Length: 511
Image (cartoon, rainbow, N blue to C red; front, side):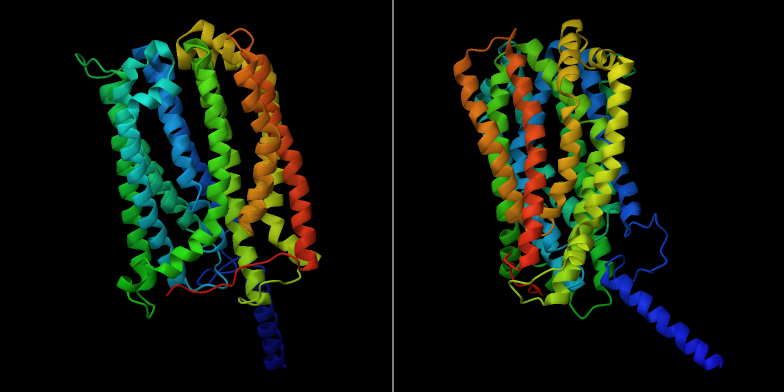
């Protein structure tokens, strides 16, 4: 009787463990009873990602405050760092954004292959980042003439040359961050930002803050040098941390460290196959955005400063939950997509998915959608009725006029960012499964809505007095339109997958 009871218990346990594996809740070496805060569980990864995104958001806000105390007229110059980052996003959202369909596939690919893909990505991104840094440094004058207000253009050249090499470090950070999240190691990007922020705080306090050492006369270039040094420290820490963890993971496998760390054509081909869609999407979107930014800069220093401050507030601390939930959603949708691909067969190019299969794949994105909805509603109510936006804008710009313009911008389009937060979570379904569909929805939004506005602003004859009348429709309207488009495209993606019409690339290990 005891043996029969024990047999039934073991069978039930085996079934539960198999079900857990099929649902892709845990991977090899992780207990099915792992605590919810474990980094390889959905909610545990959110905690890591919140801490990861919170640190640079705090520093980005603080750095603008330091510069405003040094010279309020140079606050708009610091946005050149942001616009350099927009260019860098094209390579940082290219191959790295596509890793969740390959490196994130923990069911169909071996750990050795996933680590080899990561090293290949790291080498490729480093070369692209270095090339872009050299180009920015050599074209500093042309860059300033387009993205820096005329009043501070000449004084901004050194700042741009220093900041240009941040592209190299951001490319490395993007590669390590995306790949290690796909490997269920969100602690590594957290380590990157912890080191960078810790060093930033020390150097800022010592050199440019209001409690700096007496006798020092910092400039905006001091802040640029500090940021570059700390970005480099963060990138170095991330690479070393990844090398240490990957060496430890490979120690018990038959594949040598040398074989796994050498980039190869098979790995690069698989990364490019997924990354070409995210690269194209990012290139089109950011090209149109920079087109609009050049128009904003032409409106003068006050308007450009107000827009920069608005973005610092909106894309800084307030956007942390959105970014954290997106990172967790795209990681776990990728895991579930890999589990389904493994079930139907690695070599199958077209397979029909049942509605229950589709529901299991998209569950992490739906969870993030529901959570971010309530967070954004709460933040909107609090910020809309407390009146704290203007005070915050004044502290960041040290200008009453810029603060007033920022408050006006905030009140007119802040509600649109609720739709952005929701569409970001829904987009993870496409990004982590079939990136070509992610490209399709972005092209629909940018070509059908944003591009006509980009052409129109060159012919309207805008001035600083009437510019926001048009810009609020451009930036706010695009967020609402994008939400509607992503909902439609997600539905079409699901219907195509259900009917077996979606074509999928075969899965092959690189080592």
